[in-house]
Image (cartoon, rainbow, N blue to C red; front, side):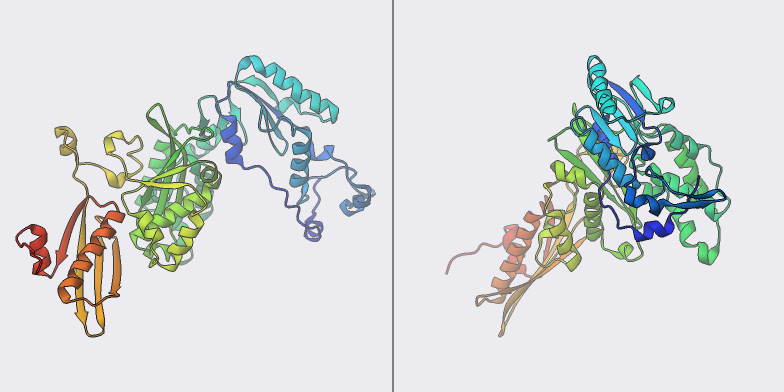
Length: 468
């Protein structure tokens, strides 16, 4: 029976009862030794309609006018109503030895010996509320299974093999609709795909240019398609974080996409928790590198908000991201992002050496030359460049500072001195302010340029300054 409830749904107020976050459900489920998966039998139809609302579900047939006495499918608030009921029924078990997503129920046990007891608690509640299960869709006492749309095991979180097979069995798209289908399947597996925005950008370019150029499957698209199928031959196993542990975020920025990976450390080994990627809009693509990096952090914090709220996050970056976000002279969007990130416990850390970095293939820009690895020498700290200049006039004295990172990110500052100063004094103040800025950015290798011979020769030790 298929009934169009479009008009009824428009007239009904929206029930804002939230559905559980799938990522959190999957994280809390993985790592258990034994699982049981259950599915309600026509779950929505087990909830009775309020008698005053039965008329609203009326439908006409050749044999007369009928209405539903139980909640039908396709009502816009049916999912929220059912989830509220399940939360009420299993409120003593959810989060402990049971998880529920609408009509999908899962009983979990850290030890196999606990599983029978956990199932008894679940079935006791099912009998009390007279709820029925669909035995053909129930699986009891297994080590792994799909919930909801992910493979959860005691080892970690795996991609759904059906979704992987659907991608691996695809033939190269022949029209725009097939490209859209391909992009949808990639989005469904995005949590497992490292730097998906960069790797599969050619597919999105086809859609962007479809209106002007039509369907164009290029060699670049075919290469990306083959790389995708090869990558899915052995997708990564994701790990779930434990309560209170510190997590770490690696960021990668390119001209057209930003990416990140959230990792946790276990026995001195870094294990991925979640991959995030975003293709930049035309405006975002014109951002300087510092702004793109900050955008990557903000986007990751929005996408991974539950992780950022529940854990302390260490951000690995060689850019002075903390300094960039907290400077009062920063642009409006940087100030806005800084305020948005202020609610989280974020620490900025220098990116570790490549030999101790388990996810080196993700952060491609921090690779080390093979000659350095073979000789055992450590790479020198990246070189920063500082330009300083000071001047004095009748109206006052000031200084200009330009600090350039190895990635050519520029930090420009102007200072006005609030005390009388000569040209030489202004030059010294400019140098001092520039060095303070470099210290704030944790610079270890700095080249300073100044047009004052007095300042340069004194710093080099060629001049000595005597008090008058």
